[in-house]
Amino acid sequence: MQDFLRRLPKIELHLHIEGSLEPELMFALAERNSITLPYASVGEAKAAYQFKDLQGFLNLYYQGMNVLCHEQDFFDLAMDYFKRASSEGVVHIDMHFDPQAHLQRGIALDVVMAGLLRAKEEAEQTLDLSVGLIMAFLRDRPADEALQVLEQAAPYWKLLDAIGLDSAERDHPPSKFVAVFNRAKEIGLARVAHAGEEGPAAYILEALDMLDVCRIDHGIRCLESDEVVDRLYEQQTVLTVCPLSNTSLKVVDELIDHPLPALLDKGLNVTISSDDPAYFGGGLLANHIACAEAFGWDEDAFVELNRNAITEAFTSESRRQELL
Ligand code: ADE
Ligand code: ZN
View 1: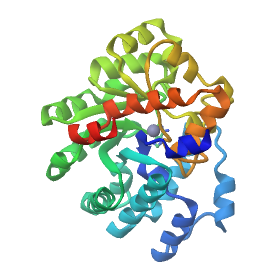
View 2: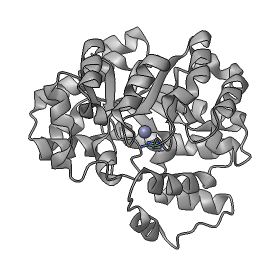
View 3: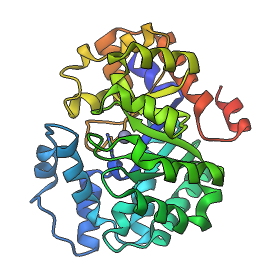
View 4: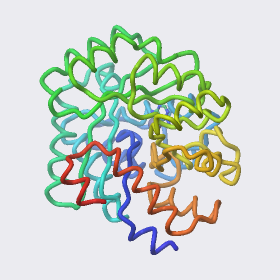
């Protein structure tokens, strides 16, 4: 089964590129940029990756990305992940990135974009990999700031596939970002949002109704509301479910208790992703293997999940046909 899963062409719709920063690269970039890390060694960093909840993770995630200062750092970050993912059979990645987290540290948007776009171009030319770009906004920061960043990103609109909404979910409902998402729609950008990860099922409905998203990142708490499940079923809205993320952040106690099988039983449009692979114990292949072990799914089940993802991937129709 592990060989089959490694060989299976896999599609990842939910990946935060800053969450792919492995401790080894973090140390190398820290040295290159003369930054002092709060860890004495790679081993100490890895040992610190024990999280109580989403906020506990986000604290280390934002701290880790302090080593990203120059265009080359963003290029190295993305290329390092693209090569690793490609070697594990990943053929498409829709990649979130968090511009506000870098702007806040004095890193210009042009620096972030130049590095990520160069890596995307190189990956698409040298690996069998296509990459979609999702500019994500931090829901625990003011909505005005998100709108300003979206306007500032005008030179890049044509190169983006979608905007997203991430960071601390509790008490930051989708409704806070209606103006930003309306503006993205006006611009012609697709919209996705994290909802129902730590936040309530009602946030999923809000994201659908008020932000007009085509995709819900996580969404696993939909099972707490029949109304929300019915809606997701009727619309066949894709859910990007991240099993190892959910156990790492204690959204779910053990993988065996994960709602994935229940979501499939309800006929929902489920896909699997890794979220922040450097922090949650592995990438898309590791997530596939963990699901095979926990749920005993057969090969067809994984083929089906990746088919669901291909249909929704931010890529050209010709690439989609090639992957189907
Ligand atoms: N940013 C990076 N990973 C995230 C997650 N799992 N949830 C919300 N925001 C995030
Ligand atoms: Zn995420």
